[in-house]
Image 1 (cartoon, rainbow, N blue to C red):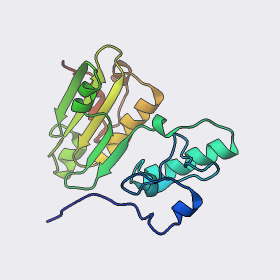
Image 2 (image 1 turned 90 degrees about the vertical axis):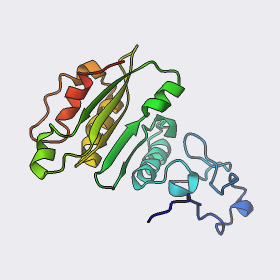
Image 3 (image 1 turned 135 degrees about the vertical axis):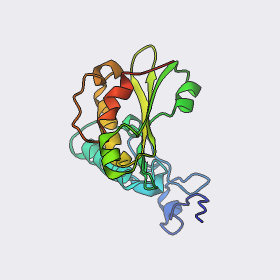
Image 4 (image 1 turned 90 degrees about the horizontal axis):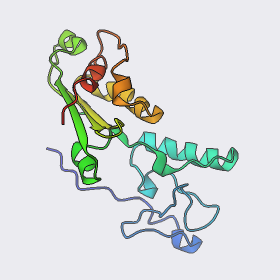
Length: 196
């Protein structure tokens, strides 16, 4: 049995009070959209800032700060598309908003959903449990989010992450020629079968 009761940042012994760096009630270092703390010229990256508790978000924190400091860029944490994987059986890859989150934000949505049973790679591996689900804004055709629960879901979700980052619409995604047999080959089909 696994019981997850939350996370707590390891910031107690960093001397943040002496430096004047503000933390929230849970101990996370408060940062702005460029990851700067309450003290100019001090940045907080990774798990300590509460802006993501993953290796990939921590590395992206570094990319944001480095680009802003060294290249004069104006990168922001709020531009990051939330994505993660759960290494369960079958694996889950997630990006963007869930259907409930999209509706709560006022989006009228169209949903696409297909089981993993017709996916060549899943059949080949004998692991056909799961599904692919996509969430699309009805008015703009923007891809709002997706989930791939199944064999290779943690890898296949990258196709949607990259499409969202590039601003690809659902209609444009249906014209993608996907490689067979892969898990990701089902994604363009799901975008082509959206329902209210």
